[in-house]
Length: 256
Ligand SMILES: Nc1ncnc2c1ncn2[C@@H]1O[C@H](COP(=O)(O)OP(=O)(O)OP(=O)(O)O)[C@@H](O)[C@H]1O
Ligand SMILES: [Mg+2]
Image 1 (spheres, rainbow, N blue to C red):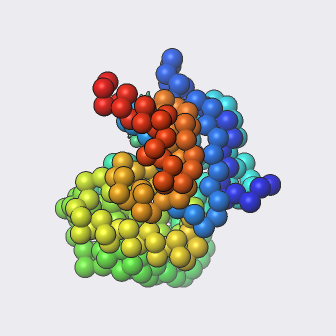
Image 2: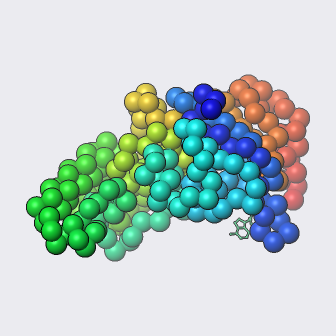
């Protein structure tokens, strides 16, 4: 057991002939906001899918708080305290913002038939707590005034905040954000960054995929660079821009 919150060791995943993630090792120490950058198609989102359980690795091991999580279901990993957001937000558009947040898979005994039948009072109490918690996280993310709106009517940036609100239904110890800044207007982006910092100060650790370099440089340390499925750089912000392998990876991407 190392001091890492998340430990990814030699993880690989192919799609047919394509080595989307090709022997990646990285670690996320507790308390950090780690940046994960790299050109389009580098394998960043695939790596998130492997960590969060929506894809299974072909090889390698993933540990969260010292325990193996590779191959476990997304739901189990989420309940263990490792939460993620998607590159493209996936709200239920015809449900309200509040309902979307309340759908987060916290321990809802109400979903279990036997409990429903035997202990209706307990189910009601759980629902009340879920609603209170949902209003709390909507307040924190600045979406409280939108709680009765249909999720499909939110702007792209507000949908990103809704994704954040959903995962805050639990108190995750590690949060994976996939391009939180994409499609978010500058004012809302400032809010989002403030929220990330506030949550980090409350003890939550982050691993953030982002193409917005200002945000990465200001917020993330250390920074890990992925290209063609491999880690090509790991270090502090100052080193990234000057690193010839990183420049190559990005210029290759522009030229392609
Ligand atoms: N389910 C899948 N089936 C087949 N190929 C896939 C699948 N998911 C991803 N890929 C391919 O794997 C490679 C890595 O994709 P991935 O989405 O992880 O990249 P990324 O680094 O997140 O890129 P971007 O910055 O554009 O979001 C790409 O070539 C992509 O087309
Ligand atoms: Mg991606």
